[in-house]
Length: 372
Ligand SMILES: Cc1ncc(COP(=O)(O)O)c(C=O)c1O
Image (cartoon, rainbow, N blue to C red; front, top):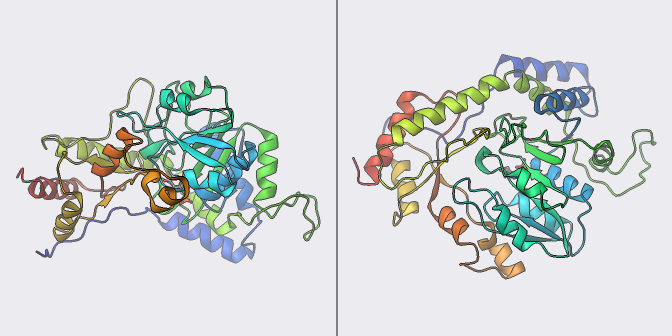
């Protein structure tokens, strides 16, 4: 079946005249990289999340890599993390020839379960890598009690607040944000690592720039490094996005509230958990779990035919081909994650999603699930 109505996309960035002006200013300045917008964006971002320092990088993945290196992770070390995440969080450990050791997730928050993580720690564990999945804050106080270095994957969690009322990124551990086009704040591609540790900031600044100290000659390098720099063009867009971040976050929260109401009557459909205590989700995606026994691929296809984009999100990392073949993972290892991963479906979600669009999605889903 085809429809003549507009297709509702999964994601849509909000960019306007401010971003345009900011980019044009950089182009006119002639300083497209290693210019003043980089430290300006870093300072403004650090202030926003309550961090002492921030290091702008070319992607969230690059930020995770640098943060794990700064935490001392290297060959044959183990990093305890969640299998329910975007693949980059586990891959970052593999970049350093370390092994991601997975532990199961909490069925309410879908974040790494602190008890399961504690049970996975061995004498080779060098770091914990909790992910604030779908923008819901991981249980940082519980992870801190395990006494190991922590790198937070906050790529999906700008705007989130943890159980102690601290904004994600402001606890002092390295916390890594991502600015890909579907994120709360976007620079097209990009990322940021926040930290309370000046030495970590200095090391990441150098490693993102080929291992060069700020006072070195251009072609001298005193450590191994990478090109993980973020351009001034991207940082200018980031500054403009930061100026309107409250509006962007409120727009996502409003879309989530519309979904909660519109989807409430669908039997067997599980919605993202509500905030508890001081915890606040930084809304990133709206992922529902389909009723048990539903054919998810057929659901995606039927929704597409009705002009509604959706996506299975997220698949379990340990069951991906690379992880099965490299580390020997199999079905059944992490039952909560596997159940959630098999039923999760991301629905169209962005600031400005209208009530009418949400109703169209809800009607389509109700019909496809045979509950119209
Ligand atoms: C949880 C998580 N970790 C890491 C990343 C990687 O970020 P990037 O795509 O900016 O490299 C993403 C982004 O998609 C993510 O959602």
